[in-house]
Structure formats: C-alpha cells, structure tokens
Image 1 (tube, rainbow, N blue to C red):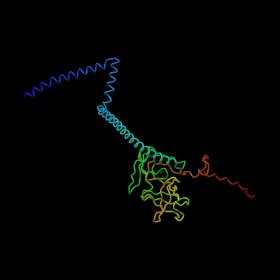
Image 2: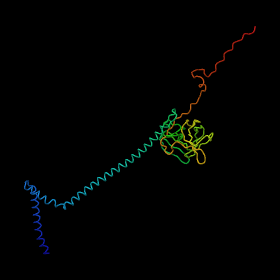
Image 3: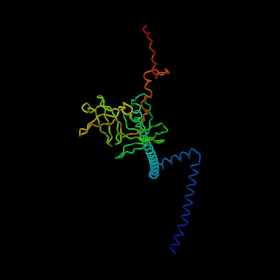
Image 4: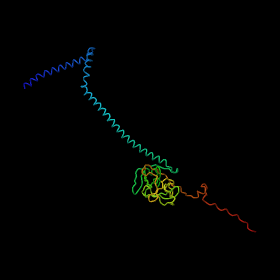
Length: 306
C-alpha cells in the first residue's frame, strides 16, 4: 500500500509538469505563428519544409479515409443513376409496348381504309370488345349498336375480307356471327368461272363450299365473293379463295384474319329498291292517266245503200 501511495505522489506532479510544458509549447507555437515578421516567416517556412515532407506516414491514414469517403460517395451516385436508368428503362418498355399496340391498331385501320367496296354503301367502324367463340358458336361482340343505326343482318368486314353478319343488336353493342359458325350460310360466286355456291360454316377455319353448279369449272385459288342472292349480303364482297382439303372437298380459305380481329367495319345496306308500281318503269310518271288505257275512237258510220 505504501509503494502505491509513493508512486502516486511521484507521477501526479510529473503529469502536471508535462501538461504545463505542453500548454506553454502550444501557446508559444500559436504566438510564433501569429507574429507578422520577415524573420519569423522565414523560420516558419523552414519548419514546414523540415517537418511536412516527413509526415507522409502520418497523413496516409487520413488520405486513405478521404479516398474511401470519396469512393463511397461516387458509388452512391452511380447507384442512384443506375436506379434512375432502371426506372427510365421500365417506362421505355411500357412506351414501346404502347407504341407497338398503336402501330398494330393503325395498321388495322389502314387496312380498313384500303378495302374497296361499293361506293353506294356506307359503313361504321366498331371495336371488337369480346370474342365468345366456342366449339359450338363462333361470334364476337362489337361496341356499336342501335344508337349508331345498326340493323340485324348487316355485313361486317375486317381490313381484307368478309367476317360475318350482325345477329343481335343492343343499344350500345352488337353481336356478329362469323362465317365459320354452323348457322352461317352465305351465297357466293366463284370467279372467274361465275359458279354459284354456298359457303357453309362448320366451326372450322376453312368452311366447306357446297351446292356448286359445276364443280369441274372450279379450281383451287379461285376468288370467292358474295353473290348478293337472296339479299343476304351486298354482291362483290371478298370472302377468300378456293382450297381443297386432303379428302378432296372444296373449302374456302378466308381472307379475313380471324386471329386478330380488333376492328370491324359494319356495312350499312338497306337492301335493293323494290318496284312497287311496274307501270312507272314504262310510262313517265308525270302523266296523270298513265295507268289507264285510252278510250277507243268511234268508228265512222257508213251510209246505207239507197
């Protein structure tokens, strides 16, 4: 215990002395560095030249720490830029998809505009809302209805050929029965032979051609158009081409793209004008008595023989 107390009595004054010396040195250094004198300036320069070059080992940890902080800040900036680029890439991907969809829709609309139809026919374009195709029924729903003047039985086309006919009209929507449906029976004309036939739907992509007048005059690749018989459809609408299945049966390779039905053109067809007054085709209508035969003139009297 005595030894510990004597050591404490010895080190305590030594610590106070060293602290006082350190304070005096620092104070002197501060005052020396603050003196504005040429001699003191030269002395300070010599001290700096002698001490600073030998302090690289002491500055190395500080320099390394500063470099690490700078690298971390650079990495953080790179990470933020990378995240921003990822966000922009996702936006660009969404814009690309939207642009592709718009391009496809634009192509469909251009195809619709390129279809050559009878100039006397007007039309309205509708968007396909739903495809209710099934093994037993082939139809689609479009977004035009009675408010747009749609009538049952009107023909619908895509950008190339005939798709089907309107069967069921609501106020805002209409149902279109496709040519491939089993209830579809379309009178057609096969060109160039002019043969009349029926395209009969059977729920396949290539419906058969039945009731051909002279099958020997029909060849694969012949053009199929509506004939207008029975006023089912306007004449001259493209349906497709004649094809032959492995069993030798003639079928219609449809021109319409049933895999991508997005827009349909509904043809306004109010039917052929029916003649209600046959005499109007023979005599001018401005004659009030055009329908009455003229009265016979009286025969001149012959004088009696005297």
